[in-house]
Amino acid sequence: MRFRIHFFFTALLLLAVSAFGQTRGFLKVAVIDGDGAFNDIRNKIGHAPAVEVRDESNEVVAGAEVLFTLPAFGPSGTFDNGQRSMKTTTDTRGIATADGFRPNPTEGRFTIAVAASYMGKQGSAMVGQSNTLATSGGNSHKKLWIILGVVGGAAAGGILATHSSSSSGSAAAATSITVGPVIVGGPR
Image 1 (cartoon, helix red, strand yellow):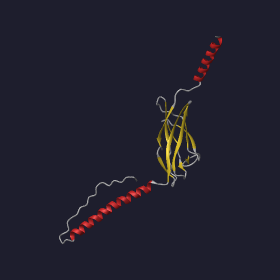
Image 2 (cartoon, rainbow, N blue to C red):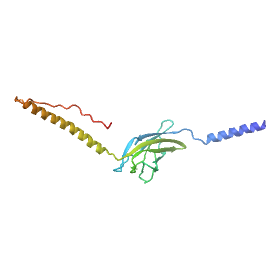
Image 3 (cartoon, rainbow, N blue to C red):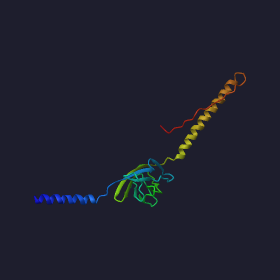
Image 4 (cartoon, rainbow, N blue to C red):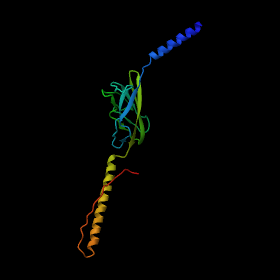
C-alpha cells in the first residue's frame, strides 16, 4: 500500500514539473510576399520572402525571432549576409523580411524554410520560389510582335480590298477596317 501511495505522488510530481516547464500556445507564420515568385538568374534579381507572425490569439507578435533557410544544393541563392540562412526579428506589425535575396545560377523550383520563435512558442512556414533564365522583358517583346502582326495583317487586307474593287472600273469604295479586342495570353 505504501508503495502505491509513494508511486502515485511521484507520478503526480513528475506530471506537475513537466507541465510547469512547457509554454502553452503556438505561433502562426503566414507568408505575405515571395511565395510563387520567379527569380531572374540572368540579372541576379530575387524576390525577398516576407512573413507575418501571430500568436494563438491571432495577435501580431513584435520581436519574434525568424530564421529563413535556403536549400544547400540545387536551385537556391544567398541573402545579404552571403549565407544561405538569415536571422531577423519581426517589426511592430509582426512582419519579418529576408532582404537582399539573390538567386544562384541554377534553374528550377526550391523552398525556403521559415521558423519563428517567441517566448518558447514556435511556428513555421514554407516559401516556394523558382529560379529562371526567362525574363519578363522577353515576354513583352513577344506580345508586341503579335500585336504588330495583327495590325499589319489588317492593313494588308484593307489594301487588297481597295485594289480589288478599283480594278473593276468603278470608283473606289471607301473601306473601313475595325479591329476588335486583341487578347494575348500566355503559352499553352
